[in-house]
Length: 213
Image (cartoon, rainbow, N blue to C red; front, side):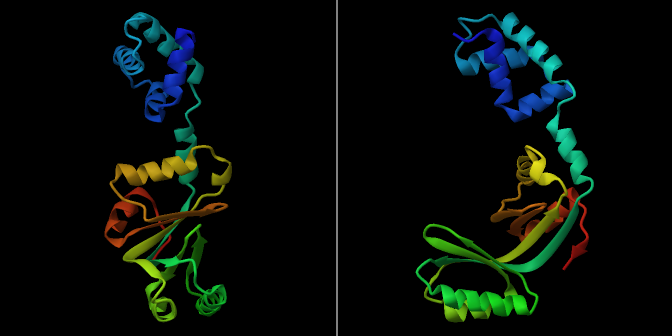
């Protein structure tokens, strides 16, 4: 059977919010110990005091290792851009790929936005509303879902690719502010998130941004 220390450390490491509070020293050790024993069904086999001591010792091991602090520092140097009038199309995959490639070329020729994500059964397109006729005329029989009144948030964070937990941190901010993510993509230092436009004001309060169109 694992030791009390192993059980305690495993539980805390698997619960990010608890671990962060432990590192920052803003947790009630007695309440944490009772929670661990109750959730693991060990309250009749392990003493409350033993878990409490293991929790305190684990905090000493974790001091100065808060990834959230490092991530937050990194995001102080970010660049955020917001584009409105975004549409997402979910298309059946049995369309003609050459036609889609041609549309992509035409859209990008005008320096407009075009993203394509290929799944096992569908293709998701993310475009600006001024180009929607190109999709709806050519693929009107292939459209499964159309989502409008969306905005694209592009967060450029140098070093994010090498920062463990950074993506979790970003999505956590959206969750904490009750903003649902309709699409999520990443490319090296860029994180691209599509949300409903009505939530943009909430995002502006979280991140600084360079341009707002």
